[in-house]
Length: 309
Image (cartoon, rainbow, N blue to C red; front, side):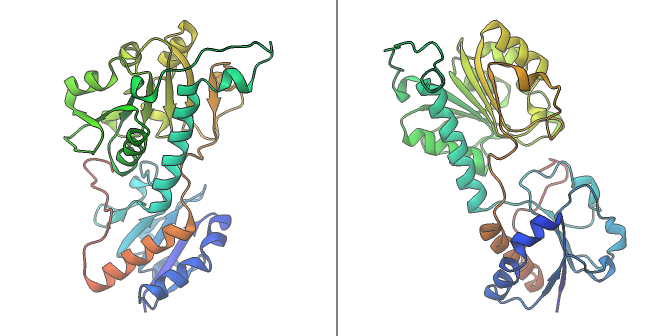
C-alpha cells in the first residue's frame, strides 16, 4: 500500500483530511495519507509548504511530488531533478480564474467604480462602449488564459491573446513571438496577465508594453507579481496611461504595509485570491496521479524543468 505525505499548513490539511482519502478510494487506490508520515516512508508527497520546507533528500522512496499550486516557481528548487514534479491543473482553479477575470474585466469595461464610489453624487450619463468595441489582451494562453479568453469572447469582447509558442483558441486572436506580443497589446483597453513566472517572462509588462495599450487602459494581474515592472506601472498610473490596476499577485506576499500599491488611488489590491486551489476538485487530480503512477501510466501536468512550468 503506497503511503502519501501531505506536507502543508495545518489548515490546508484540514480541507483534505476527508476529501483526499475519499478521492483515492473512488479512484481505486488503496493508500494511506497523513500529514505526520515520516518522510523516509513516503512514496508520494502532496506539497503545499507554508514556511517550513521539506528536505526531500530525507524521502528516498518518493516517486513523485504533487504540488497543490498552479505556479511552482517557489517550490521547483525543493524537488530533486530526478523526481517528477506535477503542478495543479483542475476545474476548480479554471472556474475560479474565469470568475475573477470576467468580473474585473466587466468592472473596468463598464466603469463601475465611478458609480459605486461617487462621493460628489454626480449624475454621469456616459454609457460605455459595447464589449465588441473593447480590445482585451490576455498574456498567457495556457489552460487558465485560454479559458478566460473564451469566456470574454463569449461576451463579445475583442480578445487578443499572446503566448511564447503558437496556440489556437476558439474566439481568440492568437499571437506569439516578439512581433505577436506587440500585436496583442496594441490598442488594448484592458490587459490580463496569466503567464507563468520564468526568467523569460520577468517584467514582461514594462514601460514599452504599457505604452502600447490604449490611453487610460486597465491592467489586471491575477498571474504572478514578477510579470510586472512595478516602477513602470506606477509611472503609467500617475501619467494616466493606465487608468486603474487590479493586482492579485506581488513579488512579496503578503504585500508589505508600506508598499506604494496600498495607498495608490488607482490600484485595487486583492490578497492572491483570484484562483484558490479548492480541495473538492484538487483531491481528485491528486488521486488520479497516484493511480497513474501505481499503474505505470504517465502522470498529468508534469513540470518541464527547462521551461519552468
